[in-house]
Image (cartoon, rainbow, N blue to C red):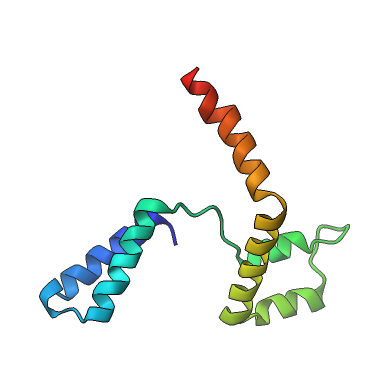
Length: 111
């Protein structure tokens, strides 16, 4: 979920349930979400369409058995896949890419 979407959701919750009527758990969850909005920025997401694109064969088609399995993926499996992709990215590319992109695009602007 993008930060703008999260902000809108928090606004809708606060409109629907006034702060005085919110449970402690809800207030804590909103506070954590607001902290995330201010301090973290999402990089990417994964969708079933992405898996299809990754599984294209030489004819630019997804094999029928692969397509069937992709269609059957449930939310838990998609979350697991997203976590594995995140772990893989963090272990292999994240830090070097972050430094290179920052230095090339943002650090040079100040000079």
